[in-house]
Image (cartoon, rainbow, N blue to C red; front, side):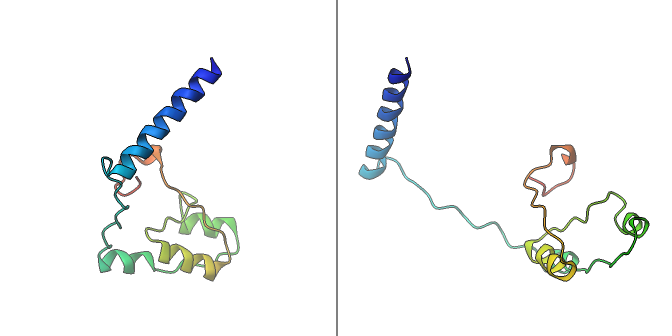
Length: 101
């Protein structure tokens, strides 16, 4: 059974390779996402506040997470604070917030 599945998989890969090489299958490069408006870039670069106690942290970020909308803003804050970045690519619990996906 396993050998049969491997043979089928190999045939599919071979067929796709032949299509791609013959021009019958067009492979397109990935497109760059559209640029963010300047207002969004500026808003993401607002620096955080240094805190010494958990109470200060909760008052600054009530949910406990500092969200950044751009990579530049997040890396700037990570450099400034010395804290790591948690890269989140999907958040199904935030389905009502645009831009999460």
